[in-house]
Image 1: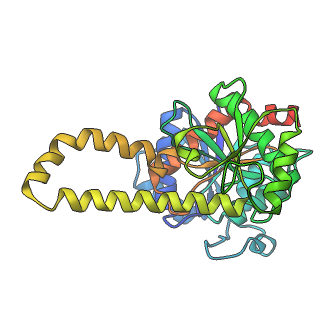
Image 2: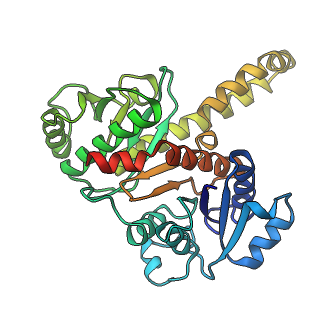
Image 3: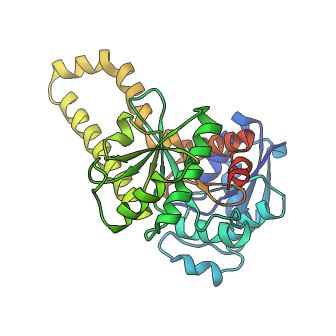
Length: 328
């Protein structure tokens, strides 16, 4: 049976929401989860839920790295839940790690205890974005590396290329470099260096620069960016979505006629919102790690954790890490 290690103590709503999502994911995908953290708190959460014993084990970890702590905390808290969960993957007790706590701590723990794929300088968060196009776009890096080199971005492009081939069966994914304009001479020094390097790399189809709107409207299957720019683009899009939902809510509540209109529009609106809801996507793969590692938003609720498990299971089944390793 597939087994996934869950950092039960990581995230704004841990442990209750994390454990509930783990339970739902274990039931839905017929897997086993290792709930890593403080046993007393985990047992309190489990008792509130109908969770078959055969679907989980508790793995003790006495320490917790809080959301506000720096990644350096993993060197001080040797028995932190994220470290113990990463060790479960390294030692073969689990085939994947799911974490909703500190992104920096999760990345550091994965690097130290699971390791990098040989040939990859730094791992990248690969986030699949909703799109109006027939297939989505994966953004690499969505926030793991604020400072990058052209060589690192080229590696991100290669990993994104393999991911879209493996997971979405796109034979020749289109690789775009996120920039402030489509022209070849646009951008800062890093963008210009990366453009030249991607243009002369024959391992994938580079289509040139893309702009922010292409992340959600098509044009590229893989969007390459440094983690600083990628994360700003991502958080900006989340802010626009939150604003739009608030505007819709206020409009529908502004009159009786609009309330009546909402009753008719409700099914379509729910479907549209689900299509762009971050919790529906669950989490992002940390690509470049020598194992499956899914990082969820710090504010993840149970549904997001359940969907993060879906991402992990799919990565295991499609052998995306093995495929990346074979092409590096």
